[in-house]
Amino acid sequence: MKGIILLLLVLFLSPVLYGQMFQDVLNQYEMKIEQLERTRGVFKETPSKVTEYRIMSFLNRYNRNAGMVFYGFFDDTLSVFFCTKNGLIHPHNTKINSIELSEKITEFNSIFIQGGYLAEKRGLEVISEKKTEHSSSSLSRELCEILLPPLDDLNKIQHLIVVPILDIATVPFYALEFDDNEYLVDKMSYSIIPSLNGVIFDNNQNPLYKKERLTGVKYNFESALFVANPDYTNSKVKLIQLPGTEKEVLAVSTLLSSPENRILQGKDATYQNIISTLNENEFELLYFATHGILNADNALDESYLLVAEDNVQQLTARTIQSLSLKNTWLVVLSACETGLGTIHEGGVIGLSRAFHLAGVPHVVSSLWQIADDETAILMTYFFEFLGEGGELFPQEALRQAILKYREENIDNPYYWGAFVISGVPF
Image (cartoon, rainbow, N blue to C red; front, side, top):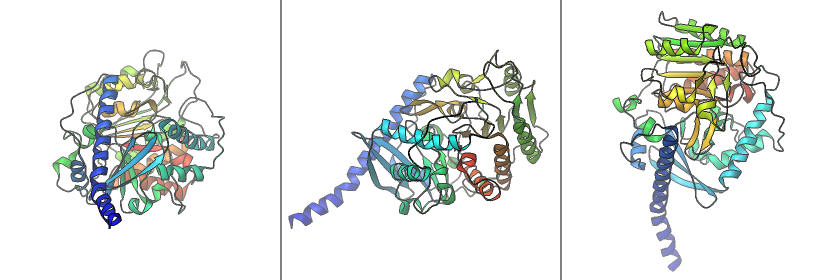
């Protein structure tokens, strides 16, 4: 009898306990985001507290099923909380500390970096010599078990929203492979959000608050600024030219065919020209096809998008976050390692977050040194699907582009797994 009573107490109290743990994770997350924003000098008071109910209400605005995954460390144990339209799913725990997790993420990513050693890359000419003792499949399945909810729960959704801490945002989730030999990209789209309040609950950035139900969106960019293959013959670092970026920009701009498109390339793609063009015009799309330079120790001031005359000024994360881009709907950073940066408890400080702070709801970035020619093909597919429109966009458009690329080109995650969209889908 006592055993039955104890079991009933556990069943009754568990949801209450898990709910409190989840709220603790949300509170810790908001505190870390505040610290991160203070580090960047852009802190602003959050309008209200994030709760499980508010998350459920947000998810229920989608016609299709979406879920949100959260992370919290408790005594060297990582707890993964998964919230759906119906509320919090039973969390699962892994005995692992933050250092061990970071090592596994770095090792997993290094497999793909080595896999593209023959490609011309849009970044520094650096090839990792680090070898891994694990296969990509074994490491991938281990990360699936650590970072994702159980497959039975995951298979019930069509979009996964990842709320990252530390360097979890640098995981190429699309390239995670499950025991059923499918990648995450085969099952659903996903997105990374830089902050809960700043992206999900900001009325200025998210049209979900203006619609009871979002049935889909079609991208018809009426104005766009393209920056491609700047002339950096006087560059302080050894870099190759990127002829694929000019082909890429030509293909994408032709798809848009708007008279308001502007293209800056070669010697015209200077810092001064880019900044003055942005200050004098409003663009719905910003597209940078160039080299991305990463300094993980000081991403705010020393990670940048390479433009012409780099010995004068560059587009650093600090410069970008000070811009006013509230009328820009999408930024594409078709350059190397633009989704990386300085690791903070609240996430990654870098170029992608800088554009969000400038007012952009969606940013496409990369997690490693991407291939020049193959990236041009993938990005063209991406904009073809954006033009068709649909639900859970732009994330689902990128997913469809990846699936098409895998079918018609090279089914190697190095070529398609690096790209991620931050910001929640429309």
